[in-house]
Length: 124
Image 1 (tube, rainbow, N blue to C red):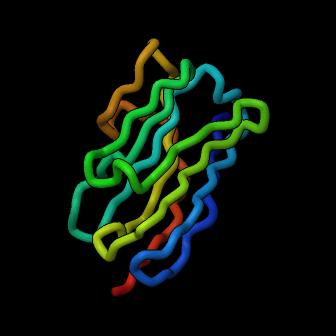
Image 2 (image 1 turned 90 degrees about the horizontal axis):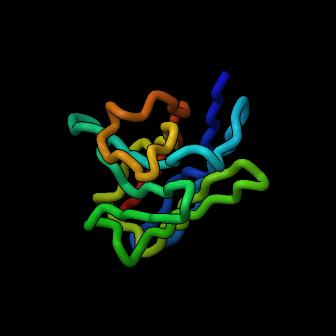
């Protein structure tokens, strides 16, 4: 049974940094595409960053240069280092996974495994 648990969210001021973590259990992430998504009230869930099993990484344009996704296959964990946070980054952040096809899919509908989410709130 695949299980994902996020941690590290919080409330910060604009310009601050946060590090989110996702601990996976029930499977080894080395075979999976791992991703971070976020959802704000009234908005659709959107992709933030993905990390494929071969190391390929992709970011949403809105977070390029500010966020860094990383994975530690030996510890079965996924991280998201967020810097220069802005109020528009406020959202519930989710860790998600799908079996890798040699590339990562980007739409949330293609990720069958999800964590419960961790809230990030950025105030101006």
